[in-house]
Amino acid sequence: KNEVEQSPQNLTAQEGEFITINCSYSVGISALHWLQQHPGGGIVSLFMLSSGKKKHGRLIATINIQEKHSSLHITASHPRDSAVYICAVKGKNTDKLIFGTGTRLQVFP
Amino acid sequence: NAGVTQTPKFRILKIGQSMTLQCTQDMNHNYMYWYRQDPGMGLKLIYYSVGAGITDKGEVPNGYNVSRSTTEDFPLRLELAAPSQTSVYFCASSYVNEQYFGPGTRLTVT
Image 1 (cartoon, rainbow over the protein chains, first blue to last red):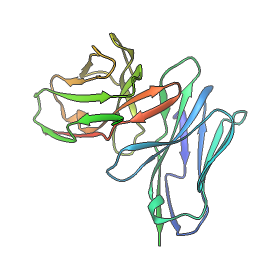
Image 2 (cartoon, rainbow over the protein chains, first blue to last red):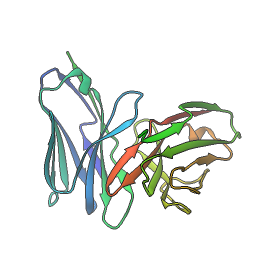
Image 3 (cartoon, helix red, strand yellow):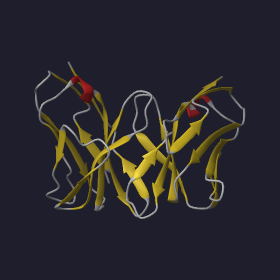
Image 4 (tube, one colour):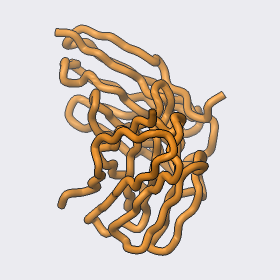
């Protein structure tokens, strides 16, 4: 079993829909990252969380440390949100990240 | 700031050839990383460095070497390319907990 699991693996949505992507992890962490990767493109950091909730525009990320779970929400989704969303955790006492396999999101007009 | 830059963007190698993937960052970050990304898999750490002159192995170091003579540069060397090294390679640097990724190098070994 992977230390970082994401669900779903693939997600399609109509423009305007509310999107939720989930990330569960099995190790103690100091931080959790949500990253975005566009097709053929580089990787951009969206959020870094150690507790609670963060919001940036239409994106909201939450984390529940006790349940070892994080969610990434996209409100009013748009075709330009189509990308792979990657969850990564930084374990305690380490400088290294452990990555999930990503969730591929396609938003259709 | 250019951030993290990688060269080349694409490369095709024959089995047994060698090459160096270049990575440079201009943010004065101490921590730098090399990852590979295979289809359907999460990024895997190849090597990382916590500062000039210090490097350490990640999860998948076999077939690769690194050096870190300056804070800015962290090249990744493939000595004897094998088809299993066909992948997309990302370099990253970090400050505190934030990671910054380069645009990637797509390498094919045939």
